[in-house]
View 1: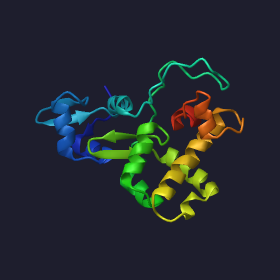
View 2: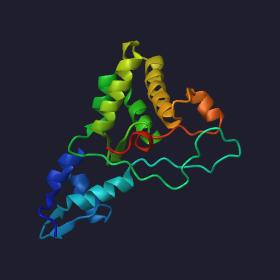
View 3: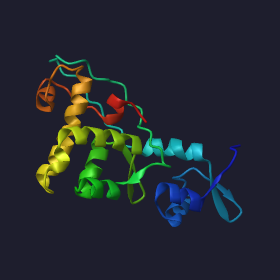
Length: 194
């Protein structure tokens, strides 16, 4: 038995969702929990395992005949780990980068930004976000005016960093990486899970 079980209110606060959402998911057997009298209790380790299964896990496609890059990983990637106590809502990240929330959601879904979707909330891992901040500070993307160009430039700068690291400094652009059969890697796949 775990040392301490979380209440529905405590778990809701960690996940940035309502207590009702937590209780509804527990009653539907979608969220691991224990019914104790009239209330619910949750083991943080079991919830962390459940969350990691819910996380964005980029699909791996089969390799092509042409190969100039290191071979793709064919086994499924481990789901990125997100420290819930330090996770930030995607809305806050969008505000910080001055981009639409849908852009942050897309970055989470394609794996370039480590995060996960919980209830109605999209959460971003703080360590992954710190890495993005360092990349964007070097790139100058944050100096661009708000709009599509700024949003695309931010995504491109991070994708270029991931491709550069994955290709071992071969000097490939994202476009040439894709043209030669490469799949832009995920943040967790290149930088490691936080």
